[in-house]
Length: 456
Ligand SMILES: *Cc1c(COP(=O)(O)O)cnc(C)c1O
Image (tube, rainbow, N blue to C red; front, side, top):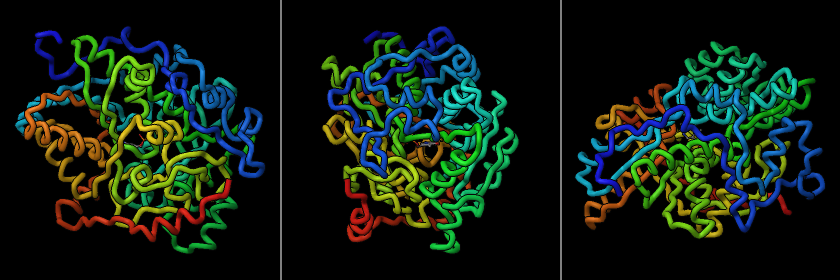
């Protein structure tokens, strides 16, 4: 390691931004299981996926072998508006925790959408445009993905239809208006606009929706409109590929100062930021070049890795999507109504699921009051008001650093700070008023979901 003092923020120049995404699957000996067609039980081929996804994105989805996929110049130009993103040495947090550990975080909240999701949104919108499509449809839960996609579509002049989980639509009117500012049409889900929405509303009148249900609606909306395709902001292999830019930049910045992390931590919803952050490091580990300790952090109220099962399941509640082999709580799982911390998806990226299953990755969970406690400490020392999702990683990084205080170990910890929390102030308000409670699903509740898994 160099003796040079490490600055608070390590910036790369535009020219140092990666020229290609890194496809982690190329280095996996056990590849993630293929998506299956629920009707036939056979792997989804290129032609099967064409009615729903853009051609180039299907190629990326199915490509388990090409290690590097060049980033088109137009996407690089867009990335330059907010990338390379800073890698920050959390000196103030280290001081606050009185830890010998060295803490770094890669900050992805420096763009108007407020999260890392823009990295994949611009890529997906670009390939849709390049194919000559008119528009894309998608779902959004907390709103970050919808906002990112609206920005990308606004920039490229593509139509953007967003199905927003109804409870978020009502709780986060400003998120909705940001999307509309960028030209997206936002519909609360479940809606009466789609067959699947009408069916879900008939079965569960008054439901406030779920991500899985909004996905079903968005897929139907794309399939039933000429010149439209569906895009998804997490879980899929292609999304992890696009998000590898986070890890590639983080690694380049650390390499400049000769810093090697011992531990890499990320929050995990569908797995895209964590998968992207760890990709180049995990690649080194898979090739036997180096060892790292990777940790996924999830909410105790939606514990897909820590308490789910590794099985084929639907990606959506309406069962219109292919089956993916992943750690899942069952596609009907909806986190308890008081859950405010995001990361609500019932499943996990097949790539991360496989790596977890094979022992390359660890996972842990926290209840939301622990997460907001960490968010507040972080906001006060580091200045950034973190997204509740990101705060899962903050909590785990802080706990690791506190362990180091006890053992005297000078561990180097890197974590992903995926975004800012300005649209989550209702949740922060509940926390401040002492009105936030924690809910951990019982084994029986989870078992009910596992029993309904499709038999493959
Ligand atoms: C969407 C989101 C996440 C979780 O999604 P992943 O696909 O698991 O990365 C985490 N943090 C923020 C700020 C998000 O918007």
